[in-house]
Amino acid sequence: REGGTDGVAMRRRAYLWAFVIAAFTSWSLKGMAMSVRWDPGVSKPVRDAFAAAERSMGFGGGGDATTGQPYGYRGLPGLARGWIAGRRNDLSDNQWRTFRDNLPLLAAAAVATSALSRAVRRAARGARDAGKILIPFHVVYGAAFAFFLHGFGALWPACLCLAHYALCRAAAGRPMIGPILVWGFAIAALARVQFRAHEWTFASLADATSPMLSRAARQRIAALDAPRNRGSSPRWWIHYNLLTLRMISFGMDLHWRRLETRDDDGDDDAGPGDHRSLVSRSRREVRYSLGEYLAYVTYPPLYLAGPTCTFNAFASQLRRPLGAGCVALRGRSVARYFAAKFAGVLLILEVWTHTIYANAMCKSRVWQWGS
Image 1 (tube, rainbow, N blue to C red):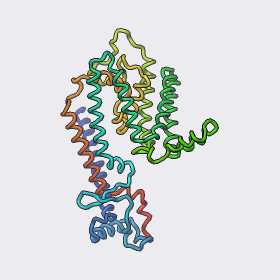
Image 2 (tube, rainbow, N blue to C red):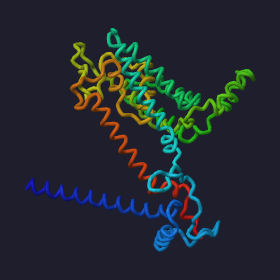
Image 3 (cartoon, rainbow, N blue to C red):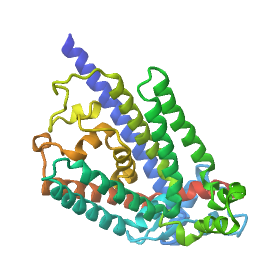
Image 4 (cartoon, one colour):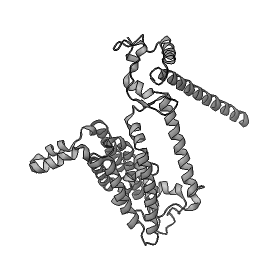
C-alpha cells in the first residue's frame, strides 16, 4: 500500500512539473513571437506576419495613431544593437544594463578581492589573533568598495547601518522586545528608503542644519551631490533591501547568543568543518563587534549578490576558514565550477534579452499604442 501511495505522489509531481514546463514554454514562445514585431533587425515581411498574428489574437490594435505606421512600427525604447543572430538586445532595465556594462570591471574586482583576501589570510596565519588583521582589512576594503559604487552617497546606508548596530547592542538579548526592535527598526528604515531615499540630498541636509553651520560649510556639504561625487552606481537604495537582511541576521544572531546558556568547557564551539553548526551558533572568538558587523554588511560578494550566509557563519570564518573536509570541491575545481555556472547563467540571460522584449514592452506600454 505504501508503494502504491508513493507511486501516486510521484505521478502527481510529474504531472505538476509537466504542466509548469508546458506553461513556461508556451509563455516564452508567445513572448518571442510578440517581440519579433518590435525588432527592426528582422525583415519587414516577417514582422508583418507576426504583427498580423498578434492582431488576430486581439493585441496591438490596428496601427500607430502617432506615426500612422502599420502595426505600430515605431522604435521601442530600450532596445540596443545585439550580437545574436542580428537581433536587438533589450537593455531597458537600468539595473541589468548597469551590471552588464560594468561586467569586466566587476570581474576584475572579484579576482582582486579573492587575491587580496588570500594574501592577507596568509599574512595572518602566524598571528596569535588573526582577527586583528583580517577584520580591519575587510572593513577598509568593504568601505572602499561601497565608496567606489556610491561615492559620498554611501554615507546614507552607513548611517542607517550604524544606527541599527547601536539598537541591536542595546536591545538584543531582551526576551520579546529584542526581536521586535531589531525587526521593527529594519523594516521601518527599509520602507523609508524604498519610498524616499531617491529624494535624499546633501543639499537638503545642509539646509536642515543651517542654524548650526556656516554658509561655507553648507556649500561644501551641498557640493557632495555633484555627479563627480556620486560613484559608479549612485542608486545605493537598490542594494538596501539585501543589506537589511544582513542587518537583521546580525541582530538576531546576537540576540540568540545572549539568550543561550553556554558551557565553559568549549564543547559548544563549532568545529572547523561543521558549517551547519556555524549557521546557528558562532565560534567562541566571535565578539559581535562593530568591526565584524561592518565587515559583514560591506563584504563585496554579499553586498552585490545578497545574504549568502548568516552573520554567525561569516564572522566565524573570518578567523578560521572551514576545514577542507567540509566541501567536495577545492581550489581550482571550485573556481572552474563557479566560472562555468556563471557563464551559463549569463548566456541564458543574453539569449532571453535578445529574443523576449518583455521589460521594454512593459515599460513602454505598447498595448496602448494601437488606435
